[in-house]
Every structure is written in C-alpha cells, then in structure tokens.
Image (cartoon, rainbow, N blue to C red; front, side, top):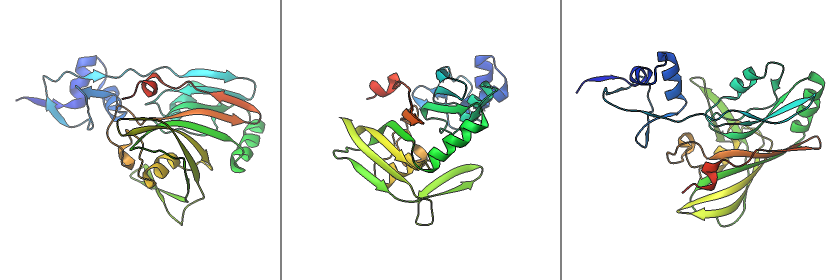
Length: 244
C-alpha cells in the first residue's frame, strides 16, 4: 500500500499549498469518513479521499464609534478576527473552537472603561454548551484556576494556587447521556468553563483536552454578553439545536 503525508495528499486533492493544507488539518477541519485527521505529517493511504469542513464567515452583530461585536465562527482564532478589522483591538478572546460573541474596541478610552468592568466582574457572560453525562440540577463551581503554558499551549487546572473563578451551570435538555446547559461565568480565566466542567465530571463534548469525547468541535458557544448597558447576542449554531 503506497502512503503519503496527509497534508501533501490534502494539498493535491484541494489544489492548495502544503502550508494551507497543514493549517486546515491543525484546525480540525479535515475528516476521512467520520474520523478527524489529527496529524498533518502522518502517513496515510494515497487513495484516501478527505472531507473538509467549510468555515462560516465572521458576522458583525453590532458596531458604533467605540466597539465592533462579531459572531465568531468555530475553528477561527480570535487573532485572525482582529486582523480582519484593522482599526479595532480584541477586548477579550474565545478559544479557537468556541463560537459566539467576540468584542473588539476602537479606541483606548472605551477599552479602559471596558477592562475595568471585566476586572470588577460587572460583565454578564452567558454560554451554551453540551456536556457529557446527565445533569439534573444547577451546579455552581467556585474554584481557583491556575494556567500554565507547555509547548506554546495553555493548560489550566483547578488549583488553590490559581486565580479566583466561579462558574454556574444550568441544565436545559438531556439527550442520550449528554446535557445541554446554560453557563454563566464570573471572572473569566483561561479555559474556565472547560476546566470547571471537567471538575464536576461533565466535560464539554468534543473537548478532548479536558476529558470530553471526540466530536466535530468543542460544543461551547458564547451566547450573550452585557457590557456598559449594551447587550449582544450571537444566535445558537444549528449544530447545537440538532445535536444528537
């Protein structure tokens, strides 16, 4: 059986450069059947046919002289969104596979005001997630989180040495040993919802880094944010409504 590196085969199949093909695999966009291709340099049968997930476009939700709010698609880094909007800076970040409300600011005066609101926990942040297992009652997790970087990758854990973090989980729908939940976060640490979900033995579906089973994506969506008297909502993705 003749083999070739996955990214080279993909580049030939899609008519793109090797570096574009490698990036698509690294983002988790490439499948063979229902299995995600995990290693761009891995050897694979050269007759393999790939299936590539199309990334949705980032949609502006709201804009004024101070702020632009985007409905960020999954599989896109927050920094890439910032590069698309030249005159704005990220106010906060969402993980690559997390979709939803992402805010960028247009001037330093508004940025400083907004950062103060975040620091004083005055920003309302509501997410939707699918988690493993059956959750029947609301659960609140008030556990400090410590984040460390290894090989240029952030990893967070519940630790008394960490920074304060509080997350509230509210069950909504139970389906086939999974629960759709509303999540409200306070503080906003790196990977906070993902870490607290694992801590209560309900890791987020698709979040293999923190104990979830493999899925097309990490099933986490930033649904609603209230900041300085404004409210922004990013509609729930179709995949969340029809997820089985």
